Length: 142
View 1 (cartoon, one colour):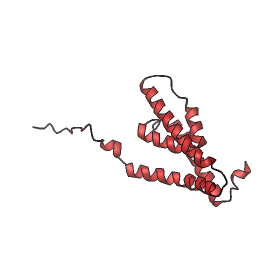
View 2: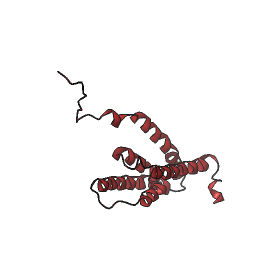
View 3: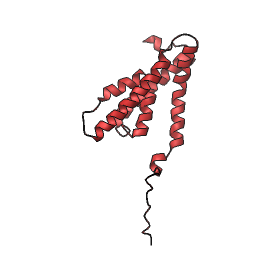
C-alpha cells in the first residue's frame, strides 16, 4: 500500500526547478537582444569591438564569480562583496550574472541586491535604446 506521498526521483528535476523555464529563457533572450544587436552593429560598422567582447568576457567572469560566491556561502567562507558583483554586472556582465542567479539560485531572494541588479540591467537597456533608436542623445547629456 502507498501512503499517498509523492516519491522524488533523484535523477529528475522537481517541478520547482523547471517551473517557468521557457518564460525565463524568453525574458533572458529579450533582455539580451538589444545589447547583442547594438554591440554587433558597432563591430560590423567598424566602430568598436569592445562592447561585444565586454559582454561576452565579463559575463563569463560574472558567472564564475557567482558560482564561487555560492560555493563560499555553502562552506561558510569569506564571500565576494556585493559591490564587486555589481561592478561586473555594470561592466557588461549582467547576462552572465542573470544566468548564474538562476542556475545556482544565488542572490535571488535578497531584495536590496535585486533592486540594484535590475537597475543595472535597465541602464544597459536604456543605453542601447538611446544608441540604436534615439541617436545617442540621452547619454550625451552626461
